[in-house]
Image (cartoon, rainbow, N blue to C red; front, side, top):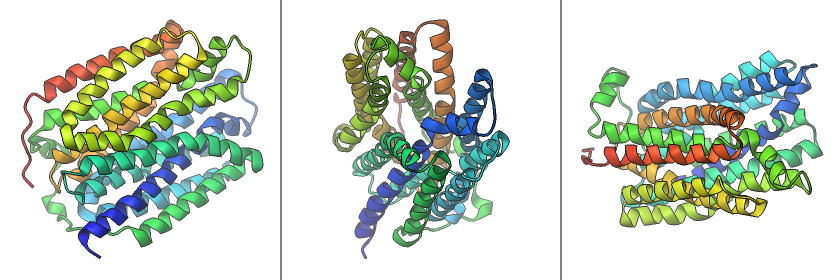
Length: 401
């Protein structure tokens, strides 16, 4: 099999892998608090607190552990890290099905986050084995797999929970991750040349050696802010939908549509914007995405109907499709082969921080202002992100592999 054929094969199977992993991770989110409530009798405030801690635990562990796994990937290979992540998440989700108290659940969520990182390692492997002139297209396809899984996950999780039980859903999810583990072993190949442990620089030296470290850090911040803005609405989405619908009609269904709209838009348009980035430049696509996201977020703070909210959330998904492949492409094009695993690992850390902080920030803003304030704050964050990227893109040095 030629290198080009293997690269295409890897892209196909890794897209399937990140789709299944993203779907599995989001399957349990809608009923996590319900599952925790089955462990005992909690007050409303205690249940909210424990649910928030359990939700955030996996992102916290992933943010802390990702740089370690990225450095190990340079020494042992990205394929091995993919196998490790799939196996770790399979074990974590299966054991969650046996959890009997909140502390076991929190520990297992930490375990899940610590042994996660499948998507970031998939990005790194594709980045290292794809010609840089077409990396935007490849990253757009990977983003499509990830976002498709994320928006289908809650729907599938709800179906599983209704057919089986909340506890059995963890076993079904674990089985899906086991299939990803087997697929990664038998379908993914990597021509990897390991670095000696003694030659791997410390984090300080590693970043000091990056020719475009200001740009890289700017992209890390972009990843974090995109996650913060996207997930800040999660705690109040059903409440906001209820308000817009005057507490009448199929509120739960419409809240699900509102939640799924950005992912649907991103999945439909990310490959297109990835190809446009290859043609016109990822830097231009990223800036365009910021400008578009700013106006959409600002407009969303003025919507007065559920149909307009769905439209605005769909449009924010299009802005994500513009920005996410561009971020991954720029990280790839400004990293050498020896740096790419650690770069994507640190990017995963910032993504996890955004996923952890976003819902907390949304809850805080909605408490101080009203629900619309979340979207206005999102517009401000996007504007700050635009300024940061305009500054960091002023001088880009082409890396030497």
